[in-house]
Amino acid sequence: MGSHAGGGGRAGANEYLMRAGFALGGDDGCIADARNHAKAFLDRARADHHLPVTARARDLTQLVVSELVTNARKYAPGPVLLELSITTGRVDIVVRDSDPTVPAARPADPARIGQHGLEIVKAVTEALLIEQEATGKRITARIALSEAPGEPVRA
Image (cartoon, rainbow, N blue to C red; front, side, top):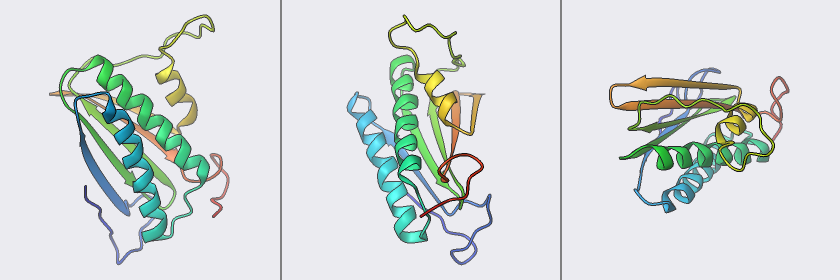
């Protein structure tokens, strides 16, 4: 795990203050590990950079990490990589896996049991980007540190 601070500890709105990467294990325990990494990362951002990471942002980050890593474990053979990056206003979550298939949210169906993960992620993030790579795919989800999109950040 690594972190990066630029500009003497000060950064513009789009400059990453911290970044960390994690290679996740091959068992289902890696999903809980990923959530724990996300929580620790945000706690460190709050403590080291005095960022006002709200409970909402922390909870949504853990939810999105859990959903994306669960899907990667379910559908992709091979390693899962998690990268977390934070600016003064947002956290970016990147999950890479070895399956090049681009996932798609399914049409709403209240009777369907399960397979709502991507729908949930799309509903709670500011942005969701899915890119095919030579060795699989990269999914990037962006979550605002503020209480709600467009509202000022509160400590």
